[in-house]
Amino acid sequence: MHASLVPTATDLAELLGYVLGNPFLFISSSTVMTTGLVLGAVAMSLVPRGAPALRIAAPPLAMVLAYFGLGSMVLATEIFARFHAAIPDATETQLASGIGHLVEAAAGVAVLFPHLRRRSRHAWIVANAVAAAYWMAQVLVITPPWFAFQGQLEVVRMLALATLAAGALVSLVLWRAAPRPA
Image (tube, rainbow, N blue to C red; front, side, top):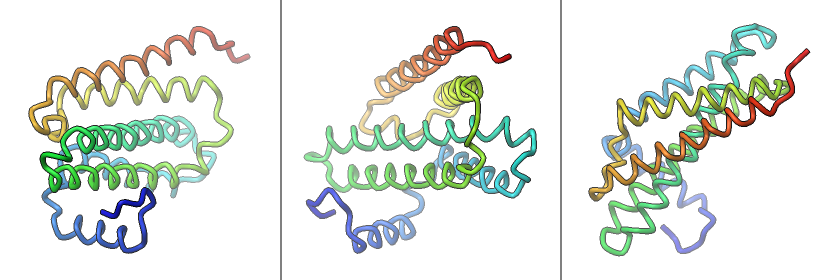
């Protein structure tokens, strides 16, 4: 990677080549599951815009993808910052993985974007609660293997669950404070 904070076209091409050349480094249970979510977003984009199921499902799916992309990038950045001096290749691989997961999540949200407009505050509050609950279940049941990078599994799991609990608490507070729809 170059010292510049903005990747060049060459950097992106090298990243893509690295990922395609080393897929076993990037494929995990969470990646496969999230790819399924992105494919679900694509399938949802084929449903007529006014369909009731789409109105209900699009905001939670977008929030699940947002949590995934941002969480992956935060963890990849933490791994890079803490361990890069000692193990540069492994941390650069994790950073590339985090960027890939962020891009994958952004693509899913972009596909859903036309179906996310004009949703009520309550729909977004519920979407956030669903996403927080979904990721809590993922962290507890199928803990992503990269949580255990360099023996930090328990700390990362605890921080992830605390962050998700805070997200769920935000939903609860907003739900209680929101005016009821007429």
